[in-house]
Length: 77
Image (tube, rainbow, N blue to C red; front, side, top):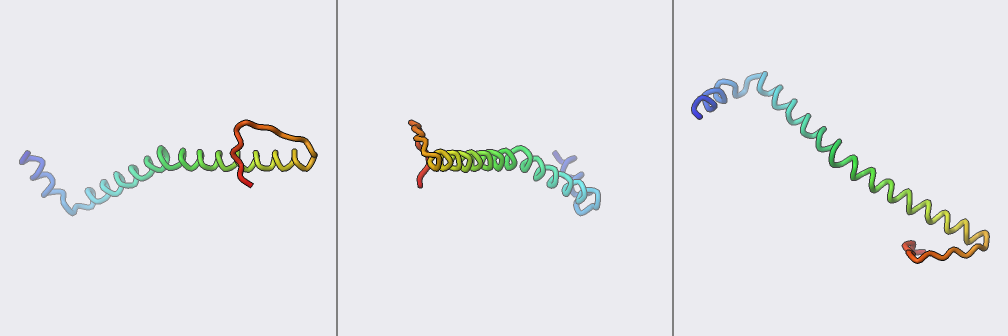
């Protein structure tokens, strides 16, 4: 354990250590964005697009005078 402590003391404040830490933090942030945030954002965008498409489809059917019966009524006008 003392070897690691001595290594830390020797490298503390070194430009190489700072650069390595910056690269590690940047890589971690990029990983989280790509693996967590983007799929979440895509699901929400897809759900919103589906909701809007369903709304437009129903309005078009109403304007044509066609009755559209659906057991899963999810739209609130």
